Image (tube, rainbow, N blue to C red; front, side, top):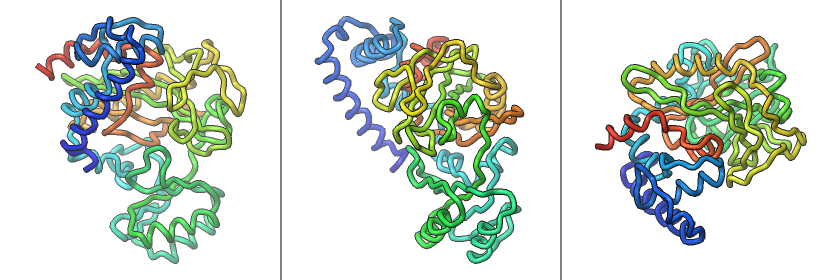
Length: 336
């Protein structure tokens, strides 16, 4: 029931209780206002004011965002297809990570989409002339880095056999080459740029962005797996602070000890935005998408993942304040 009506109602109740308890502990929040949720939204107004330093009545609570924005403008019957990593290269047409192995419904395909048997797939991994390491991941359900493994053929093949035996859909991909400046944050992980875009009336808008990086020794960028995120301003420079998954603020990475200087510019940031805005036009049934993007030293942009359901808003507002402020009229119209 990933995107079911029932799940969203349960989520609404759970978040409402959580927000109310937070408000009781922070009584100043009862003095705040919220333009979209006059009663319960006041807690978000105060919470994100404390985190971002921006006082505003235009913050979106989690409940409002997931149920009355994402829940209204994204067709969740198609989300599992769009999020399926085995189909993503065909959907995007370019800028996707190549598929070395693609297993769908128990059938294994090679990089050229030819059906191959299990032994042939294993042999290709062991004798790959280009790649020393690979990424294997389930095609759906990898939130927080779950079911994602990275390593050489000897490490990957047991997971290949396990996923195949369990009849999971899964892909095996090469490692993505990231720009040297992105690698500075954490050299052991692929550090990606999360870009949120909003589409309506024939236009795609860049809403908010941040860098996601792995935790100490981590190979994946997920904040929920021990990593960090840092806000990216509209000019491509960083905020001077980052957050972990609990919204604890920090000014340096615990592994590299790298501070987050405001003068740092994310390489090819505007090029990444241009790519995802163009790709969003292909997702006509989805008004809001969160993209995980990387770029190499030559400026080639790779879309690592696109998130069309249950993609969080909290960190964006914690960095940048009310990121939907320019789109409030549209949001009010879809809820009128």
